[in-house]
Image (cartoon, rainbow, N blue to C red):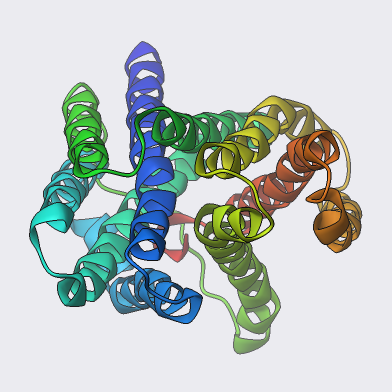
Amino acid sequence: MRSELRAKISVIAAVTIFGLTYGLSAPLIAITLANRGYSEAFIGINAGMHALGVLLIAPALPWLCRTFSTRQLMFTALLAAAGLLMMFPWLPVASWFVLRLLLGVATEVILVVTETWLNQVSVEQHRAKNLAMYTAMLSLGFALGPMILSLMGSGSDAFMLGGVVALLAALAMLQSRTGAMSSEHEVKRSLAAWVKLIPLALAATVLNAALECAGMNLLPLYAMNLGWSESEATSLIAILLVGAIVLQLPVGWLADRFDRQRLVVMLAALSTLGALVWPLALQHIWLARALLFIWGGVFVGIYTVIITLIGQRFRGAEL
């Protein structure tokens, strides 16, 4: 029991540190390209390479999870992320598309492996609480990244710092004792059963990608176009993610006690309403900060509840 607790702590610590790396690098790449005069369309296409990397590695993830331990996969992916981030300042922008694709591969391995392992070892009555803690700590890392960026600026040193932090996360993973994913509890499902379950997994993926692209890559640029300074614009991401941190444990508490599907619908309705108010709120700095704090918690809460539902319905390599 104590070894499992230590493993959970190591995995969540590594993911938190990695979140800092990603929270730093996503807006850093976008702002660096914008400062060099590249268009928003160019920046958006570059950000899309991350999603392409996710799609390319996804089919191999079940085999990887069965064959290698969580520690091995995490350590390798974090080392790769560290090396890739350190390459950005030294390579031409044309090569950044390849680097971004490979970062997408590494990021997907890290997130899927940790979410799957934590879901698998969580008992049902504490599943949402465990995953809420995971999401909150990941969001904490995401929030610290933009805060650091707003203090140190978008120079090459920021890329190097991101790489060093990823290396620290890899070292944290060396303290864990996590094995390969178990497949002994898998069940055979009919095609109809899979059709019902697949939209749930897709919803989680779409939500994650939406926050990644809209929040981490484009929100600072949109705010800067409205006249915000670079430091003020990047601080918006931090505020959004602080909301995600603070509100995840209440969301997890609700998800362990009430109908999870109804909770998702309620959170989605609140998120939609909040998103519609974004353009108006960004005209007023304090209104924008208050809205993004609440919206970040509610929106990320949808993801927390959905991955809890996935863990409730899927087993073993199905995850």
